[in-house]
Image 1 (cartoon, helix red, strand yellow):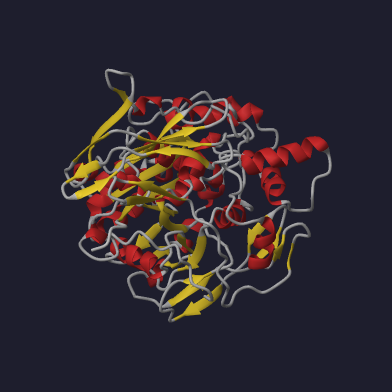
Image 2: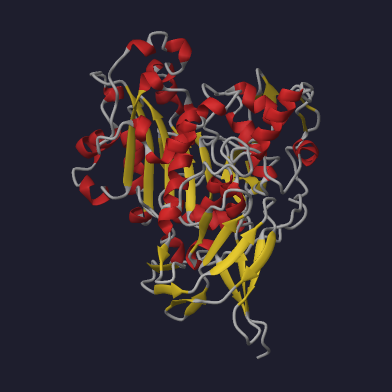
Length: 526
């Protein structure tokens, strides 16, 4: 890597003991996979602190089937791997789906992203609170892990010295598990089918720290701060997409300021032989479900919720009819694959896709994508080898500096662009009020003003008057009024509310200090 990323601010979990307590939200999409319960078992038993692992699973099985592939991930985990599974009952959330309704792995993973967003905004009403500096870990449902992988991945992330790092690759085979392998697959090449597709890997040997890659990202392993999951959620309108998922999300990460790194050692492995040798796991999609509309059985989760009524998906599904182009065509339009669209209605649709919550970021441009990745999207070809050392591409961070008191102190808040992302419409209109309803976040005082009080993980009670920041429709700060602080033992930091401009007038609680990564800066002389 050439050029030093200056955006390394959050270091609270760079050392033990804090590194053993930061939450890890594991996101698993499982399609009729008999290896899912073993993966859950491995995730808990290999972790240094299993109780900080929270697992969300989209489980796609066929109702009424007697096959072991459809037996149920949690039930088989309790039966075959851990008869004391109740100790983790509050760490796992499984949403069963009828496999005949499957729209592919990308669609399933989009539901996981939506679950994370919902638990962030609702402060854990579904499984547990998601904080900006928690880690989100997307994996497949047939994996194993090295001992203490949870803490070691956090240390590895810190070795990038980049808050915006995304550790990702095509992971090694399960036969290499727990062997401290220092030969790691490196994603850096693509080809084009109907859209962009990762093609093969190189190898990195004896890395001292993770290697910056050309934004090529692998869906089988992605380890990043959860603000990355919030800013770059998997697009829920990529129906039946396989090719196109990885290339499009990697490029979206890059335009939002995130950098994909190849891990410097093997900590997560994949059971390629057993999984790919099972023909039943390849039966998703329309071509396999010609009679899917004939079935009447509907899977429900363990709380008897119909998947169509999942709270975290309601807005997404309500707006589905407004999305003109779905699937691979949507990927190609967003990235400009095949050239610039010329029809007025297509130009408008491209603009809506790119400006939506599932579109491109504003930190880096598509021109920078071409120069950094070596990929000519318009002409559908890789024009330059970018597998070696790369120049890090600078961008301007989203940072708010707020006066703390009359003595000259100030609080520096790294928002990572999350408020702006959540302000985006789901289908592209910048002032679309159809995003997640967060009005329930606010308590009112006698005068009708918003107040907040919350117990944080350290046991302190947060009480404060509200700092209000108004964002214009373009996301710029137009005014700021900071008054109060939050008290947590010996630490002070603000609670903030962001008021989104435009016609909506939606209020979003940006977060308590622990969720925004507030760092105090005292400008007084010693």
